[in-house]
Image (cartoon, rainbow, N blue to C red; front, side):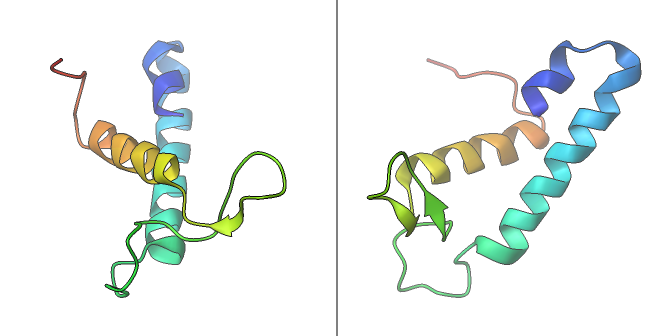
Length: 80
């Protein structure tokens, strides 16, 4: 949603940016493990491709979550 907000016409930017913020807020409030230090992942209840990855934590889910949070907070691009 944040990537779309960066490329759509000005009048549509807030729609996509607000949707991204709502999604990230929901992930943070409902699926993050901040209060559960025994977990090695950030997000719970992910589902990967196929049937072998259902209701698990996924490394790439954590990656994209952190990337989206940093973009929402003003990060523009990778340094490397």
